Image (tube, rainbow, N blue to C red):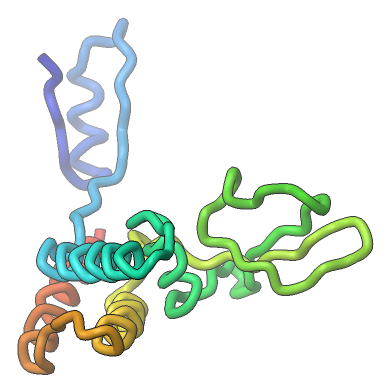
Amino acid sequence: MEKTISGTPKELATILFSLQQDKVYEIKEVKKIRSLSANAYFHKLINELARYNRSIGFAISDEEMKIDMNLSYGTLATDDNGKIRGAKVPKGTNIQDFYPYAKKYKEETDCDCYIFYKRTSELNTKEFTQLIRGVEVNCKEVGIKTLDDLEFQKMMEEYEREYNNRTSY
């Protein structure tokens, strides 16, 4: 049975010296998950939207719908210097094999150029709100029910609290 040890770096430094020295240990950052209600709501809408599209003849999986919505309403991925992340790949390369949230923005003679969007699990509260609101627009257009503004605000306030707890480590 694995034993989990957690604490701040100073607390862990003290504990590490008391562990068996002939064993190998793994240390990883503890990250709290985002609001389950916001995440569940997002996936509920994505799944209903995909189901609607399948019912009218479009062959799209729930995961493909999630990617499509993230490419439409998500947030561009940037590096530590604020530069937009992307890739230039040989023509015909299926970029989805390497990174699912990539959108082609330019074709060159021998290659295609893509920009990357953040994975949904990496979005902060503002970014996740933007994504959900975009998905809601698509849902409302086809008659899928969404939360009213007060319920949505309450859910996102919970998300904000949990996001702040997760990033304050």
